Image (cartoon, rainbow, N blue to C red):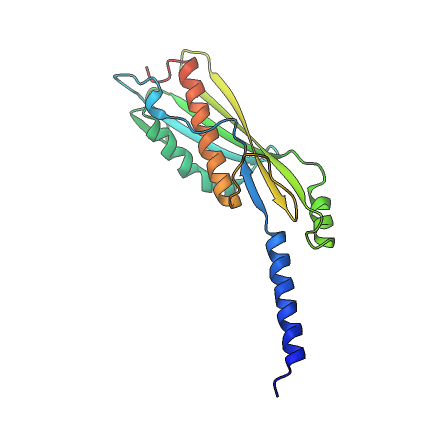
Length: 201
């Protein structure tokens, strides 16, 4: 037999779960300081040369093989699209030129686990924001010349519970934010190397 009271309880419980799920869903925001790099504005040699590309992703300074596998192809595509080199290879090239790109993810918020646990205890009513830092170290090596290294820093802000994100920044899924940060730090690193060297000569 249909029990109206029980149905109302179930509906209320379902609504509560949905509302809690919504408020517990994290939102990510990409810091606006870097922005996108326009590769069309980079210096380009009339005779660009091949380069060997080395890529590594780190978490707190420790190599992260799984993340490296994911970012390697993305970094490769960007370096190839930059137009700075005639060919990008994972293997050594005859000229000995190398481009090494290392990205280190360093959490900038202390006690992240405790903050997340606190949000959980309050069912999202007490929101929090955490910051993930990213440092991209790009080094260009050409035999007979000093190595040139540039470090570009970036950040992702993530909120959970009833917490507001940084003013003026658009919320997005974490994966989209991560891909955006990767694209922007690599682009800016190439731009800085290009300004500081005869990278394409």
